[in-house]
Image (cartoon, rainbow, N blue to C red; front, side, top):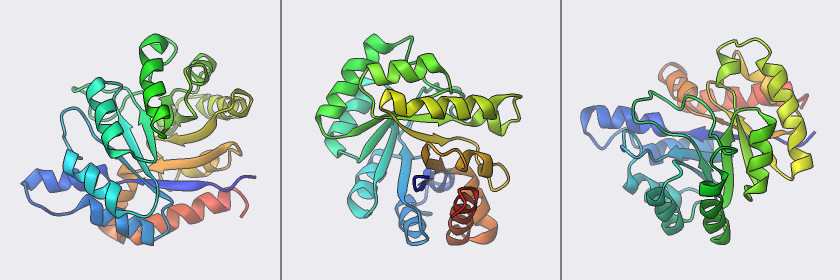
Length: 239
């Protein structure tokens, strides 16, 4: 079984900072602490409304961490231009609505492939690995491969909310990725209690987890939260 990485999303450290308009807590420091505790990468989502991560955070985190940066972004010209300027390790294209509290589902790649393909091409030509955040659906996987994405990140939100049959859908979707030439990641809503069955899926080589780890850090500290999550992931894979 392939090793599995943990990407830590530090968006909600910025949410807390922005609530009071202060310079703290600093998402860059959170990224550095998470890496020191064993995180294999850092995820940030620069939303169009800048509700948490801001442009300056992207530049600082990109320049001052020694692990890969996964830049979540809406499929817009503005975000493509920012990605091309900052050159993160990877970009994950996600659906985005200003009214949502958090990302509510996967990107409809199959329905928007003509608009998405040129964006993916520009990012790929700049040396940025492109990921599509999708529901565990064959049509979305096939479309992601067709437009040149290197990675799909499977949306685990429905599984985390207990939807019947969702774990099997994720298992089946992950099992199809290699035949399409796609690397498989997963994330959204994962916690200590529900991460095990997802971490155990052999094809999934990276989990991206944010809100739960930042929330847990209030009680246990961020290093302890990251270390426990990694231990649970390793146990699920029999390591």
